[in-house]
Image (cartoon, rainbow, N blue to C red):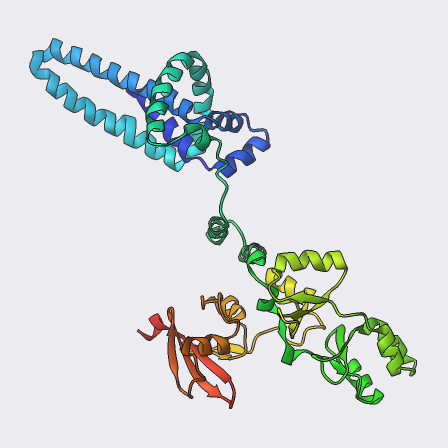
Amino acid sequence: MLILSALFSSSETGMMAINKYRLKHKANEGNKGAIKVLKLLESPDRLLGVILLGNNFVNIFASSIATVIAIELMGEAGIALAAGLLTLTVLIFSEVAPKTLAALYPERVAYPAAYILEPLLKILSPIIWFVNFFANSILAIFGIKVKDQTNDEHSLSHEELATLIKEATGKLPKQYRSMLTGIMQLERTSVEDVMIPKQDIYGIDVNLSIEKITKLIIKSPFTRIPVYRSSIDDELIGIINLKRILGVISNGELSLKDIVKLARPGYFIPETTTLNTQLNNFNHNKRKMGLIVDEYGNLQGLLTMEDLLEEIVGNLNTDTRTKSTIDAYREKEGSILSDATEFIRDINRTFEVELPTNGPKTLNGLIQETMETLPNLGTCIKIDNYCLEVTKISKHQIEQVKITIIKNLE
């Protein structure tokens, strides 16, 4: 009876502790034990019913046998002794030890147990139905519907899946964890978060001489360049592709008419568009560059397919990038010295810090929003667990910021 009790106890823990996603994977591979366990877990109330029915029966039967033996050997005085010894024995050998083993190796216990529990479930089905009927009725009084819970797919939320990926240390290379995390963040990151700001856009003013325009095209580190007249805000002509225009330049026949003819109309993106949506839009519209505009139609920046993909795979070492690393570095004492115009998300990713990203996009914006004014040189502010010190300013903005983790200061 003690052995049977241990088997029922271990099977209960093994069935409940088994990894549901690994179980589904094994079942899809055709593992018979996994298929049986998965089928049993579809009705946890019936599964627990047969396990507990068997466990309680053997425990009570063992107690009855122990009582009879105790009376035969010691009379009525032996009943209390038998109860104490049996309780200790059951607790150690039939509960704690087997359940601990099952918690450590749930698959090794659950798969064999399924071959025993499945036929028992069929044999004892009437009794189990009777027990579950009253048990479920009691739960229903408290507003708990067992069927609704058992039909739950146990799907992971966005945050839970992110935690699962983050904690997959040793089982998933760091590079892949970073890529998966990047993919998950696409739906929560807008194009505004990763765009090239308007002031950093490399463009060509057609009011310049053909010689200067030619030099700008030849020296361009980008494959696609915006072309405008006087100001990119006022009159955008379009986007030129260097692969198409270099052939004209090589023939020495470049003219303003050629530039306007080869320029493709600009493709505009609302600043609130999420990256996963924009990735689909890029593919659908067969574009690799877009201009970001706000709700009033004012130009805010520029986004390329490379910028978007870098959110997944990290920095791309291509000839079309002028900047493969951010303008920031870690000092010997552990502090981070950064250009204030750097994106907070880039700082977080590069130095593995957690500055808030739900507000301003740059360090400059974060400090000014927090203080609601342009700070003086040497000003320090505390944001979460970080101290941000203004180390360089200009007339209109913060130029450089020193970031120190507060626990390091302590």
